[in-house]
Length: 453
Image (cartoon, rainbow, N blue to C red; front, side):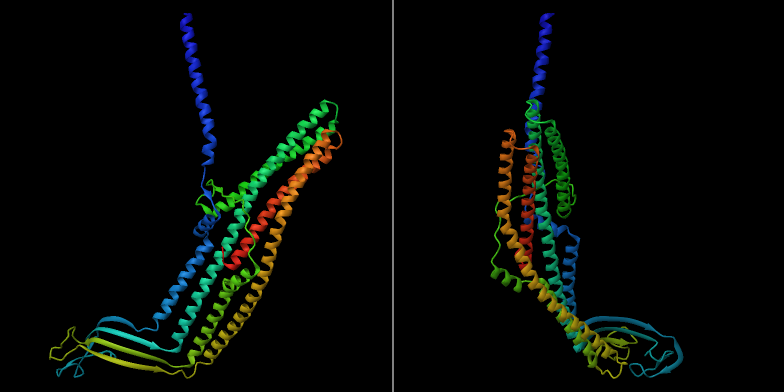
């Protein structure tokens, strides 16, 4: 009986050891699994994904493609069009005979005098061409509209890039602020324990413990708020990246901070590669073409027509009397405008008014380019110069906190001084993250302004 009991106990011990090893193995594998959750997204990949998912950018792409097709359609109007016309026509006879048909025999007369015979068949290839200034002006307008749509697409692309950059670095900053909040919470917990020890040793008052506990609770709330802010920032960016915004992912961080490009390079790139300026110039050309199209109504249009086939009482190449039905005809038409109650003059005036407004818009775009260049470059250089100052502030605040805690431990500083030092360090770290976002956003604005991003 005792040996049997010992065997059962040994089996239970072996089972317990197996369970413990399994649990330990699972716990050891959990960090590795969590590190593999979701893809690692770089800034370039985030921009690429956003271009595929953002609806306004997709609409700009569609508009640009449609404008390119409008250009092809307008050019097609300069070329002759061909159709193959087929028609069978029956008209009620009026009981009389006539000799108007083909051959020498008589045929029934149709009641409708506009028709040539009771039975009439048409099977003809028809080529039409209209030559006029309006068609040429439409081609110019379509070309300018296509250029305008391409410029607007580039404007939309750069705006999307700017938005993605802001969301990308805001999400990284939110993660860093969460790390700062957790560090501050750990610091507050440590200081709360220190005050309790000093109170137990009768080296500090209970008021110090209460103040430290209040600071501890506040830091815990800060962690919760920072966690929610980080989650919201990731969700806002995930809307542009994934079909499901809840998809887990990680952002790639780079320790290297890029420098601000030189002023000369920025001015040269912004002048030669600015979509707002191209858009305004294309809009002016489009309005010039509309003025030309409106003035074209003063001039005549030349119409050319060539027809080859049959138009006869029989659906056949040859008639019953040996007369050949197959043949051709041609016509030239010249329509000269005489009087339209000043509607053409008013249309010309309308187009000229719009053209003048487009000229004002072009001038405003040129001035806005100069102002944006000055503002963006100044913002980027200032934000870059402040990064070193912000890092120094963090280092100084950390050293101040360390010295203040040593003085408090030695009884030379108050609890308020320690709390102030803790708050100063947390504020400096958060300011550093905000400064990094500010610089990355300013640099992205400068790069999008010059077309290098």
